Length: 133
Image 1 (cartoon, one colour):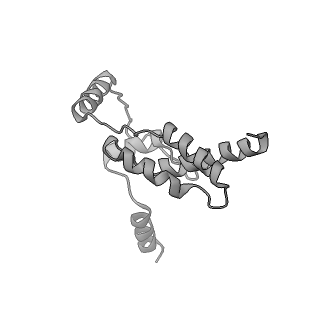
Image 2 (image 1 turned 180 degrees about the vertical axis):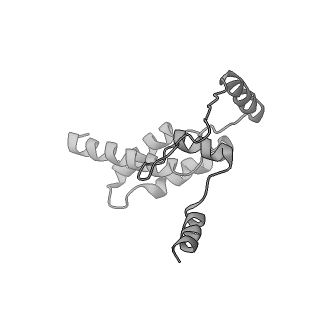
Image 3 (image 1 turned 120 degrees about the vertical axis):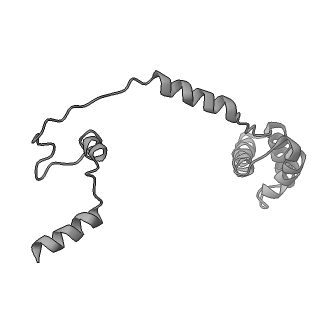
């Protein structure tokens, strides 16, 4: 096969496989997925090239194994939680946590949330309207 034809076949094979792998392919539906590959090949490709693309794509396609083990996942999460050391923060009475113009970052907002002082933008705007009237 001449180099330009082979390049065309290689490019088309990659495109066909990418299109095929967009959908989930289970072991039980692998045969159907391989049969559908021919419908993904460009129609303007010569018949001989299209047949080669289909053959290569069928050989390279396989089931996407998507298995989860809920028990092991939960066990891993529990173990990770247990490895995390608790963090304590002390806030003195009248301590300034945030000044006007400061950017609120996660470490700054934690004490607010723990003290129940966190407010949404809507709540702040509503209170501001009452103050500025």
